Amino acid sequence: MARRYGNFALAEDATQEALLAAATRWPVDGVPDDPRAWLITVAARRLTDLLRSEQARRRREDDAARRLPPGQWLADPPDRREPVDDSLVLLFLCCHPQLPPAGQIALTLRAVGGLSTTEVARAFLVPEGTMTRRISRAKQRIRDSGVPFALPARAEREARLDAVRHVLYLIFNEGYASTAGPRLRRVDLSSEAIRLTRMLHRALPDDPETTGLLALMLLTDARGPARVGPGGELVPMAEQDRRLWRADQIAEGVALVEAALPHGDVGPYQLQAAIAALHDEAPSAEQTDWPQIAALYGLLMRLSDNPVVALNHAVAVAMATGESAGLDLLAGLATDPRIADDPRLHAARAHLWERAGLLDAARAAYEQAARRSMNLPQQRYLYGRAARLATPD
Image (cartoon, rainbow, N blue to C red; front, side, top):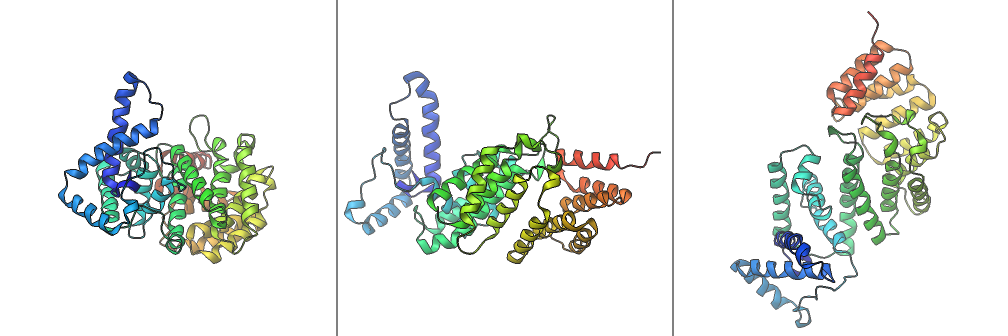
């Protein structure tokens, strides 16, 4: 609808009304032979009514019609299948460079992922009214920009591709390891990120970083069933039952990594996928190839000034060469304002102090990490670790 009529907001309204009509009429009249064509036809009628009621919109249509060749004046029939998936066009539209990152993520989940505004607000723990305004502002910016509903030209698409991948990466991370709330995982978010990344990979099969991103998601998500215990509690990787890991996803992810790495420059998503593959292919936590993981994190640090990457590198170094070396690296991060108050830094320090036998320091750091965490299962896990290290009265 957005492609045919050029108005993002009205297309969404018309589509919702068509779905509502289907929900009320199909149980009575039966499902039509071509449900998609039925929905598009009903939505088109509603959208046409909306357009006719807006004088300003009519003027814009007239202006656009004068600029189009006569052969493009008629809309496509409802059952017309386009060679380019409209969802992919929407994805690039939602990641328009004029939108702030928060707006890109919200609009992608709402328009492409199909989540309701309430669900998007709940995923990021903001009031529904706040998310409604955020999405409305994003739509307004897209409308004001005047960009057509079409895949951007090749040069612009390449420039926007980093933002598209980054939005998908953030959505996946929030789904796999929720930063706040009562659950460790939001499977709906991580699954939707994988679906959209598959779609992007199908459109750009020769792009190594898109391939690396898909591999990273699959390899990470494969560990999901073992990450949450029967009571919803966090299970750290070293204690997970690896028999629960999804072998089919691991095989697919490893194949994607091996296909991407030999082509051109190696980017951050490919490196992260290679690290995830090393974790997934290790028969046990004790047999993990930590020296190679530390080396890959070292390469990743050269590509990105990301404190989380530096934190993971410090832990990998500790596992490969000893806790003292890792703790020295973590001490340098304590003055970085981007991560100084992050619970992950305190949890990593606690873990290494515990391994080094400094139990009082480890207990205090676990408690600091727990106080800073906004995810309830993670809080319970960290407080539990601290309690096990408490000195008996």
